[in-house]
Length: 634
Image (spheres, rainbow, N blue to C red):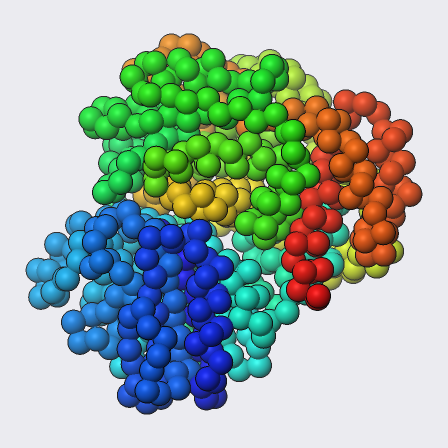
């Protein structure tokens, strides 16, 4: 796990670029506090050097930087950039190639010589062997940059699900890229300019579109599952994986056995590390499954759980049950929201966006606690979008069931619908009649009509009018499509962005067993009946690991999620929040209608979660604007 950055000035070198790349690397120090290194090269000449010195006898036009968090092979042999034997192909890399042991053996059999035990070195030799398509052979999470001095080209690649971030920006004919956008801004040529339409969409709809855009005009993410090849001839971007791919011959005839085998192997690979490993354990099915698989393989992880005092949705009891069942040392980390505004500002600096959800606030002290003695932590992210864990999936499930209703299957279908109706009691969208097609309920109308300032409201409307039709799903059925959209476009990419940023702020690598691409391919290849069956969510996970779950956890039917007492926190911070939202800065900026915003604060219905979340988004957006846009303009 590292932070990476780079500059390619396509026309000619600039003597100031060595200072720029040093500033970019320094901004990423929290991602890699253990080591650092640079590559300086003449992209059209013969000058090239790698090391920790920025002094060179030539003026480089291609510069790469790495900040290293040492996890595999802690020796100096793992220092990046790492090259091939000939010293003409170099890589800087952020992430983890979990199957590096197997790939190394295959590459050594082909004659490749290794000088370290790192997974990073596997990338450069895999590229030599298979070209840019080597990404298809990796099991893991990554964002890497390969400089190929032979072919005079730069290859950028991002993992299949976008777990690891990578951003690019152009200033004229100069390319900047980095693990974080603030590193691009630190170079000084790309200015922090807000995408007001994106901010308005976030405030109105609560969406950030992290998979395809950012809130900085001119800075874009490299898309998940894509390679980008840059040369003097131009830029070529292409996918190397899709949700239709099958990387193995999966046994769909025996789904429980296959799922269990794939999850167990995913956990086995993600336990590979030369440093202590922990687990974020909630007491839900996902983290408990990971703990069970790790324990069966002889690894006892240290457990960490976020708690919120006397909050009704506190799941720490179940987390304790799981920890005791598997003999895990366990620590509760309490968050009470006492410095909400300051915490939100600090989180926003690392996330580089307004906070998607209030769960980022307790994640901050939780991962800080993990980072005191651990560099790696396992987490259950990705299971809900793969296995239909959220209550909102009941609606497309019911519509699929109604569409499939035939005389021959009427009895079984009706039984499943009745069970689902019982499960829906207390769900966000209400009982069965609420599952019929309807408009999404959120704060959009309120935000658009009253809260947003005139300019961002107009830009939001123009953006909506100009949007092309939604991308078609590669899968059939309403539930399968909803899962695919959440997994690839809407929900999961935003969670991954926040999770990576907060863990790396504390120099911790988060590993996600449910995002092993084999498990995802198998899961999306199964009928949705294995995910949601009547009132039973995550049906396959429950049946495949039934013998491993503590009975009290297996019996749980409600999906609590990572809920927080946001209303309580914001009430406690009311004076600080008002000071921000009623300030001269906020009024002059005109992102919001301040009178409407204050009226919502003072006269909104107490306990209205939509109102609370809207105020939270407005506060987050204003704090983000101050940290990035205002600071860059001074």
